[in-house]
Image (cartoon, rainbow, N blue to C red; front, side):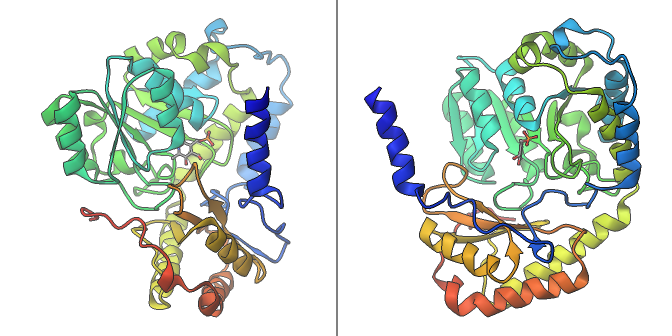
Length: 389
Ligand SMILES: Cc1ncc(COP(=O)(O)O)c(C=O)c1O
């Protein structure tokens, strides 16, 4: 097929010498800022012990779709615990954050339901609108007036936001978004993937920490961030959860997550609730890095959380920034199209509590050292938007 060959050729013409997301391989002394393990739980002994215990337990044949298994007691228990943690009536565990988002939107929208997505809402939410064959309407990032005008133009539907945006590191104006939804007759989906474990006194996420659980019908969570595993959750009413198990494509056509992962998540849920001191430290470190970067002339866009983007803009500039950081032992993650708008590529620094105080000082020093080389004053001012709060 010549069109396919041409398409693959285009990829190699652009990235023949290595994809922009992959630079040098980090060594043990390098500073790792690409991970979403914000609370440094990957090797937590309490969590590993639970997972290993479940691995050693016999008779756990679950290599099938959820529609064929009605007896997943440990999973059901975890779903109830998770729901109670975030103040929701019920919850359903999915295979990933991606499948939670895709399956949710696919099962609540249809070709007659407009879906309104913040322009920085995660790709899996856009994919859900595609799977539902629903008309998808973008609204400007965190711009509630634009959301309202879009809804008035196209009619009531599903509004979709992230609570912490994975590209810009800022927090959704959730109360204003909720007002629009209630006034205009829309339903709301909030993706809490980067907020679970992080926002709120016990890490219960943005919606629960503001006491808005009763007003938000759908929340989704990737368990690959602070929960450091493979899985996802949707929190909603019990009536919806039962419907979802038999109506969403990922639930029907993909097998359930494994019992040792359920055991891992159950223990992680307990550990995360007690991680108050880690959360405080995380925010202290993030504030320290952000403040120093701003003082050194970097534009960290609208970041307010553990996610700090350095938006160099065109891919060549981002590659230069990546190499300058990596050659001094600092590893972030490169985001480019389709994850960002074209010419708005960036290196994302994710702060985590596994960093020592000396790592943070080193990170700040490196950013200062490379400043004349990477010239942040010439970067585009990406995520500034009219309504940034
Ligand atoms: C906001 C957001 N939602 C959903 C996902 C998908 O999660 P998972 O990696 O569990 O599929 C991600 C991960 O990239 C994310 O950042």
